[in-house]
Image 1 (cartoon, rainbow, N blue to C red):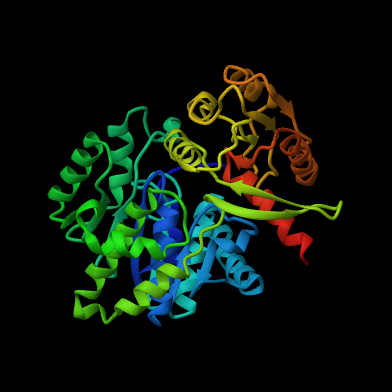
Image 2 (tube, rainbow, N blue to C red):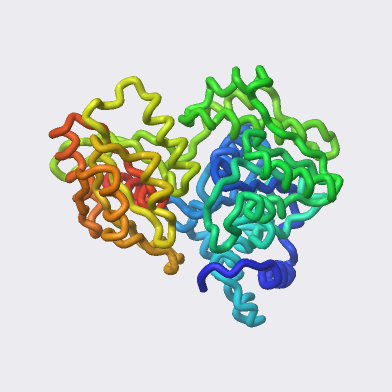
Length: 420
């Protein structure tokens, strides 16, 4: 079943499962970009502090069960399948008609109950107000966070930033502290402030520029991109909120914060990867799941900031999800000196409604910015990377994979399978 936003089905399913999402403390994070990185910082910090935590993010990166982690370790597939089967049986028995994401969300919540965690860190799947994860309530909901809000999924969330912000702000709950990326557009901030005021929810706008602690600690982060200072700032403020309430009985030391930041991992975002090929050679590529306008702007800034960016342009491998605004991404990345290989990605497991954009549609837009446009072999990521390697060596250019997290997943799965 494709995307069908709403809380009725998942709420009923969770009730039949014993309301597992209310058995432990939670943090809920929404946003267009940056929420995954923020959650990665939080999970790593709490793990280093010895606080048993679970993390639920979506979509999965390599394999279906890696969307659920316990203390930074992917939840074992055998255990995942056992609880997933239980959840699906309940759904069928009571004829609830839950979507795949609702079943996955309920599985995550049930796993965290079974494992008796102290804290769950939950990423919104899509939007916020009607997202399946948005069943969390005080007193177990300790804090909410909202990262950068930008245009994405307009067909579901609205065609203006104000409309999209309204959906994201739907995770704010009565008297629960909310931490927001202060670099958001003013109309976004206005919507969030209005919601927070209406619910008497303490609001913090994060501005790392005036926080010496954040600007010092960001130096320990292995995650690339200037925007990470905002994501870390949100994470640190949430940690501070939770630790300032003794009733939560969660304590994080300065050392665990520093060590947690150092150990943070978040694949597919400005990630440099050495890709082995069957020829025996290895090629270095930069992976970034930039899949909307805001993310493309940030990727473009990062590439422009690199002192060794080739004068011969870059070699891009690009795939996009069908329905995305192609031009809003490519216009911030491509120049006439760049080379582009267009391809598709594997249909993600248990998400058959996700499809790649047709290469012809991509090409029509890409040729507005560069004449160096090629089609890649959609059936083999190795062949596409080999093609990029040949073009890269010929032009003396770096290789960048972007446009879709699903494409990044294909690359990482290939690398993972090669080493097995």
